[in-house]
Image (tube, rainbow, N blue to C red; front, side, top):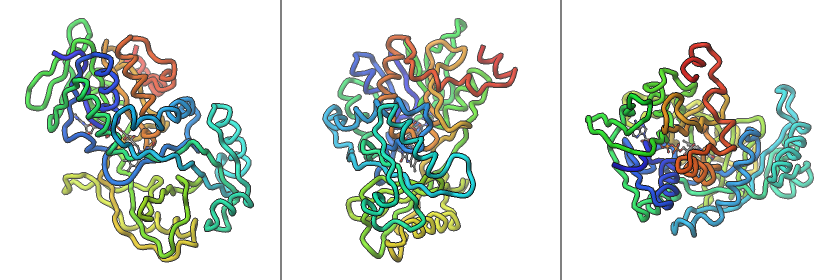
Length: 389
Ligand SMILES: Cc1cc2nc3c(=O)[nH]c(=O)nc-3n(C[C@H](O)[C@H](O)[C@H](O)COP(=O)(O)OP(=O)(O)OC[C@H]3O[C@@H](n4cnc5c(N)ncnc54)[C@H](O)[C@@H]3O)c2cc1C
C-alpha cells in the first residue's frame, strides 16, 4: 500500500513523484512504457517559451522562470537548461485579428505586467539582433528569461531524484481503471494484467492523452482533448545558423532552436499522422515536412540550402479544446486528480505545476493558479454538468 499512485512516468508524473517523495510520502509511478517514453522524451530540447502563450498560463510561466536555473542543482542532474531568450517574429499580416505589430506591442505590455520582462523590437533592432531574418518580418517580441532544456534528461533527473527519496517506478505496466470505493473515494488502480495497486491518500493521472479515457471510466464524461503527434525535424543548413534565440512566429507555424552542433531543431505545430502499422503510432507526412522546411527558408533565407537529417512524429501529446491544460480533481471521485491536455506547451511550466500539484495532494488545498484549468470550464452540456455536479 502506497500513499500515492501516479499513472504515467513522463515529466509530470516523475516531477510530482519527486516532490511527494521528498516530502516523505510513499509513491508509486506506473507507466505502460518506460520513464520518458512519451512526450517528455526524445532527442534535443524543448522550449521554455513565454511569447504567444495563453494569458491564463503567464503567472505560472513567471514562477517557472524562477525555478529552471537552479533545477539541475536541486535534482543533482544536468537538465541542459540554457537561458537563451525567446524571440517571436511578427509580420503585419492582412488577416487574423490577433496577429500583427499592434497586437504584439500590446502583448509585450501584458507579459511584462505579469512580471515577465518582454520587449518589442522594431525592424532596426531585430535586424541588428538577427541579421539573417527575412525582409518580410516587421518586428519581434523578445523575452530574455525564456530558454530551452532537455526533456529527456530533466524527466529522468526527476525520476532518479524521486527514487533517491524512496519513490517506486513500475515500467511496462498499463493501468486500465481506477478502483472506486462505495464512499466515492479512489483507493488505487487496476492494471491490464489484473493486478491492483493500492494508494491510501490519492491517485494522480499524468498519462497525457490516456488520462481522458481513465477519467471517463470514473465520470462518464469524456475530457475534450485529443491525441496529436507533433512533428520535429532536424535540419542542417548550408550557411551556419546565427540564430541564438528560441525562435517562433506570431502567425506562422514555425518554431526553432539551434543545437550545440549547429543543427536546427525545427517544429512549431506541424503534426504527423497516426500509423496503425507502426508501434510508435506516428508517421511523418512528406508534404508537412516540406511545408515546415519551406517556412524556414522563407523566414531565414540566409540559411541557404537546407538538408533534412531526420523527421520524428513518434511522441504522443494531447491537445485540449481551448489549448490550455486540465489540472483538476476528477469530478465526483474524492482524492483523485488529473493533469493533462498540455497542448504542445506543457514543458515550460513543468517545475512549478508539479510542485503545486504535489502540495495540493499533500494538503488538500487547491492552488489558486489551477482555478483556470478546471474541467468544468468546458463542460457546457446539461449531461456534462450533471456528471460534474
Ligand atoms: C515533439 C514535441 C515538442 C514539444 N515542444 C514543446 C516545447 O517546445 N515547449 C513546451 O512547453 N512544451 C513542448 N511540448 C509539450 C511537452 O513536452 C508535453 O506537454 C509534456 O512533456 C507532457 O508531459 P506528460 O508527463 O504530461 O506526458 P508524457 O511525457 O506523454 O507521459 C505520459 C506517460 O503516460 C504513459 N501512459 C499512458 N497511458 C498509460 C496507462 N493507461 N497506464 C500507464 N501509463 C500510461 C505513457 O507511456 C507516457 O510515458 C512538446 C511535445 C512534443 C511531443
